[in-house]
Structures are given as structure tokens and as C-alpha cells.
Length: 203
Length: 330
Image (cartoon, rainbow over all chains, first blue to last red; front, side, top):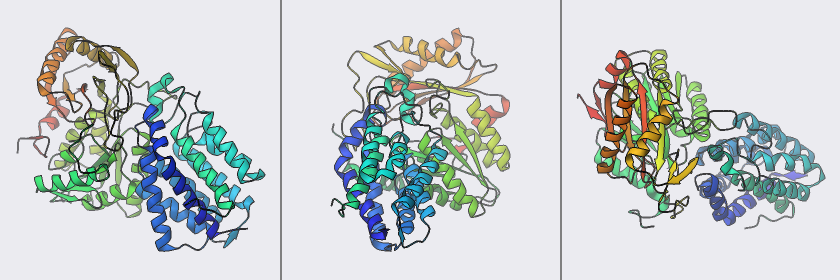
């Protein structure tokens, strides 16, 4: 069973890997976007950690809802509302249960991903965060490591795609040949699940 | 790249403190990042609220004041503001007549303004929205995020702001704003890339001797790169690109807009060429504005925006306005 502490470790591990990879995310974003994905997520997750510390939510649902709200309030751009909706929607599905199963987490994340789809209007293959998130959620039934691998290869597979959503879409064919920064950060979020399951938060 | 800043993390807050010191007519909330005209809410007037990433100054904060915006919400550099900012601005400027959000068409801006509209409506504030999408360089299709909002934002904010100042109701101010957007088209070129404070080096690589056609205002590269052209050749290309998409049946407003690092000497020379092409194409010019209005940090280059106007829109364009960056008649 996964308790609030697991979810806190998940978010903490995500924040740590966003910190570590911020330069790379920004470099990817500078090729096909506006060179701020790393710094925006860094700012957002730093604020999330601070608010988790302060408000100490005590259920898995409350951790995710609070994290999502804080991302919406601090990140801006498209990633704030999209990542915020992903976590808030998942948190809502988990409700106020003190512990949840891995299957319930998978179901909640699927609802979160549906929320991202509805909000951003993107489809698989559009070169967005969905290209990492959808395969990851599909693979969650086989465990966190399988989800991590699916997300990572999903992110790599965005390289030959032509962007159809977000700022990269303005480039048309010139967006081909670059890995999508949003899919890359989504893979970090999923990989952090495996870290949390190993008991660490990667700090 | 040398910059006149302290540290990248505080550029937006530092600029807001400076604006507060320069413009006592504005109420600048540095912590919450909302710029509001000091006399807001104005009884009986719709409050115009706009916002977007920082780095486009004087847009939007420089257009806050009587006859234009009631409030502006600056985000981080090239990053849309968050919903809390617009919700706070809406609450500050709503007199009961409602607020109009003016949103440039970028995925982030649209999402954050939509979330803010929900928050404001939950508080009982009536919210209208005008989406600005004037950039003809982007193919408006299922395969892009749609046309970007650029120079037409100045026309929308000024003209809808004049309608709001006359006490016209929200539906009418919103309809006028949409009419201005629908009547406007823009196209921009870059002679040099942009450097954001956070990155510190140019966001794309534009070799000497080349220019980028169809650029946006966030350092996103354009659609096409060519060997450097003369001001006259650029004017031909730019105006033709616009007129391929907009066949004005009446006179136009012209905005020849600097991107931030192109001197006014060059912008005026470019305007002469733009006016030449318009005259060759038989397009009558009602008013012209030349200067840095919708910038992209230190990018060199310019954009042209045309807006077809009828007598009513022209009357509203000429109406008095008093903001830091646009000021006449009062």
C-alpha cells in the first residue's frame, strides 16, 4: 500500500530530478521553444516542496491536490496548468483514503492524463508530454520500473515527430529532430515514482 | 552576454519596482505582480485586464491607464502569468460592469486566463474575453497552436479601452475588441536572436548576413531564413505577406513596431518603405504608429501590423488615452 509519505517522496524526488536536469530541459526548450522549461519547473517544484512542508497534508489525495494547486499558482506558461491539472485530477480520484494500492494510483494517473488531454487538446503523436505519459500509464500495471522505461522511450520517440501543439508547433517541420522538453520532464516525473518506491527521494 | 540586471531571478520584480517609482498613476503590486490604474474600479466602466510573459515591454503594463487597460499581469520572462494574478486583477478593477480579458493566443496564456476566468466568475464577476491572433506567419490549422497574438494587441487594447471609457457595456466592448482583432494582421522579422536573462546566451543561432522571416516575440525561430535584405525588400515581403491574408476595403492603422534592439532611425526608414508598398498596393493609411510597443527583449528586427478601420474604430483609436507608453488627447 502507498501512503501519504510515499507521495511526498515521489514529489520530492521529482523536484530533485527537475533540479538536476533543469539545464537540459532548458536546452531542449531553446531548440524548439523559448528556453525556460527547466527554470519554470524548478520554480514550481520548489514552491510545491515548501507548501508540502508547511501544510503537511496527510493523505495521498491531499498531497497531489496541494502539489497541483501550487504548480498552477507558480509555474505559469502551459506547463503550470497542465502539470497542475495532472496532479489535481489524480488527487481528486484518490479522495481522502489514507492509503491506496498501486492499481488505484494507476487509475488516478489515467484520470489525470485524461485531464491533460482535455485541457491541452493534444493527441498522441503531437510531440507533447502526453507522448511520455500515456505509455507510462499503460505500463504502470507492470510496475514502476516498467512505467519509467515506457516514459523514457516515449520521450525519446518524440524526436522525429512534428509538433502540433504549443510553441514548438510554430516551427512546422523545423521541430523535427528535437526531443520534446515536456515529454522529457514528464519522464522525470514518472521515473521519480520508481525512486519513491525504492524508499528514496533522491535528495 | 552583458545585461543591466542584478540577478536573473529578480528581473521582473526589479522592473515592477522601477515602474512603480516612475508612474505614480499606477498601483503596482510587486509581490502579487498586478499593475492596476490607481483610480480603479471606475464606476460604470468595464475593466480591461491583459497580461502575458514579461519581456515585451511596454506591453502590457505600459498600457495601463485611462482609455486603455485597467490592469495588467506580468508573468516571468516569456512565460504567461498564473491564474491567481488575473483573478486578483479582475477583483481590483470590477465596478460591477464586468471585466474583459485580452489574451494573446499562446497555449499558456489561454490556459491560465481560462482558469482565471473560472475563479473570477466564482466570485460573481462577469468576464468577457478577446483572443488576439494576428500573426500571419503561422499557418492557422489543426497542425499548429494557431496564429500568435502580436502587434494587434496594441490596437485591441487601445480601441476596446476607448469603448470601455465611454461606458459601453461588456458585450459591446468585447465585440469591438474582436472586430479589431479580426481586422488586424501582423508579420515580423528578426535580424538577430534574443537572449533571455535566465539563459544568458541567444535562444537561436542566426548567422551574420542572414535574417529570419516570420518570427514570434519569444525568441522562437521563424519559418524561413534568407540572406540579409534591404529595408525596402523587407517591407515588400512583409506587407505582401499581410495583404495576401487581408484585403482592406477601407483605410488602415499601421503599426511599425521595433522588437527591442532596432534603433528608431532604422524603424522610421522602414516605415517609409512600408508606406511606399501600401501606396503601391492602393491601401489608404489612416494613422501610423512607429516605435517599440510589443518587443522581444533585445531582439533586433521589426514587425508590421495593419488594422482595417471604419469610422467608429478610427474615432475610438483617436479618443484620449493616458498610459505610460501611449498618451494623447488628455
